[in-house]
Length: 261
Image 1: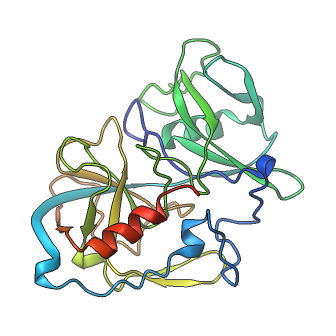
Image 2: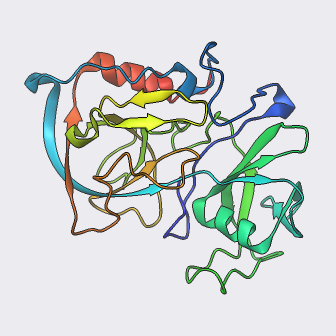
């Protein structure tokens, strides 16, 4: 679930080196496929939909959210769980507040291992004052380790960069596949050098407290901006068109991509 511009925005990605899911960067070695890494598995090569593959036409407006990547022990502000116990990493005030606002953070250790922590909820103990940085109060945010290689959404879904949407679950239910014509053909360069040519399909895997009605939030992994998706305007008056997908094969494959193995 997602938190930027809301009080309860959860999402994103975890590399659980403590349980053997060890990787080196946002983008795993594309020469080998990690069954629990959706970005490694995803070829972004679904065909363009036929008219009978689509049902409802939706008018949406978009924002995006991302995963901060930070070095461990860079400051004095600890990530804490719902019992207010320290989880290990310590960040600067700005880093802690950014992590609380985005809903998650990827922590890089000195030996190159990585572990990501997701929003877990709020509790009043050991609050961190972020009022000098954000108007939204994120001071009571608590964290937990995520399950999926890019973090956790809702209904046991994990998140997949450039695929996952956070939606108002009363309007677009989790598990819905959407086709965005303006996204088809977008080229996204990953830190590994791999270039994705997007096929236009997205999956509703997340939600957020500020994601209401026709607002969707697009997860962009460790990218901090989304020039490759110019249809995301972060302005509710600037809309784009999406369609609900009915193709059972595409629905099944994208659902599988968002399931932790």
